[in-house]
Length: 72
Image (cartoon, rainbow, N blue to C red; front, side, top):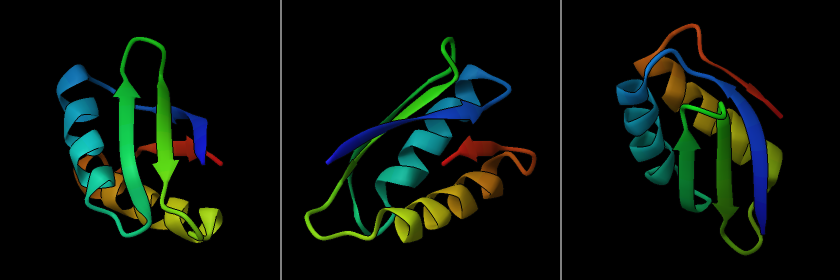
């Protein structure tokens, strides 16, 4: 399953770092963060609990940019 979320990210470099961090999160098959549109697309593993995975993704992203927010 693939979903798109709004994300607050301050720079393109941070967007790339967040994308890499999200890809390493359990339950995520692939992800893309677009700094220009402030969107994050996440492709979830089969059977993954979307809310639980997104909480883990947000936690990983906050390690890079503490004021990051994801609308999920």
